[in-house]
Amino acid sequence: MKAVAKPKKNSRENEQKVLDWLVESKALYITLIAFFVLYLLTRSILFPPLIAINILALFAAETIQGVQKEGVKHELVELATAVLVALVLWYGSSFILGTPAPLDAIVSCSMLPSLERGDMVLLQGAHGVKAPVVNLTRGEWQSIDWSDYSVICAGCQRPDGSIEPCLMEYDPLTGEYSSEANQSGKLLRFECGSCSRFNHQTGVEEHVPCTKGITISGTRIGEDLSNDVLVYTPQPGDTFKTEIIHRVYAVANVDGENYYFTKGDNNPAFDVQFGTKPSPQENTVGKVLFRLPYLGYVKLFLWGFYADPAGCEYVYQH
Image 1 (cartoon, rainbow, N blue to C red):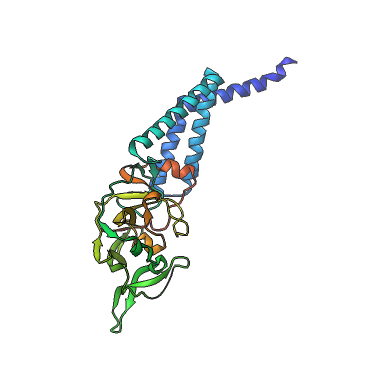
Image 2: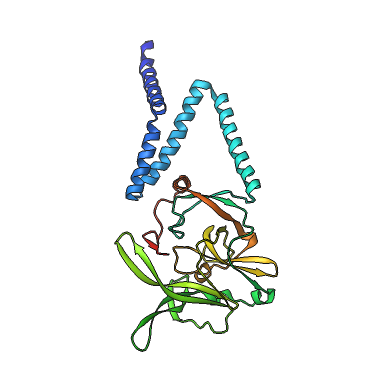
């Protein structure tokens, strides 16, 4: 009669053998690497959820085996120690580097080719940002109506039939153009031109209208890829809602307070042209020190950022 319990015992033994094999053979590490390589080669959205599940399964398998071999108390102590070390490293780095968030992941392709989607970036405090500085009075700054600067460079047809880049009124909510913008007498002026971008999906190089520079109170500033890259939080009412990682073109020093004009290296226009105001100093998270390739994918996959966003199919030539 006691033999009835034998199948359950055999089942538990088999489960234990499978668990031991998964951990000791490093099978979950191998499948994780394989899924990630396949994702990089195909960019199929099939692989990110598999990678996320693989990471969770790896954590669960090693935790369960640790509990079985060393006991719950030992595993809890190890887990608490790991969390404590991570917190010490995070807050220690935050203190040393002068930023509330020393690490961030690149989610979009707006900074190609300087920063790629899936990069992890190390940040430091956004003080002494490298970019041209323009001094403005508080009165000049407060006189700016930011709704006037939802403008973008497009192709305008002239009376002779030619098409040339020009500034058009732009509605960021509908994505539609209306009439040609009038910049006369404005504190901020945008310079339109033609940019070359390569579409790696079609293999075709395209020439498209884009913003080539900005003039602030009579000072013209062009692109400089040696300027710092800044991470900032948009303000209420801005078109962009999540943290932005873009290059600083110019710093407006308004009676001692800094505001940053930013633009993605792989975007055709400044952030302000898309309805996101220049970031004040208190909204900055930090400036980029250097990038760590691929490590940011851990955050992207665990947080559900599976598909490449719009704009990843091309790269602007600088």
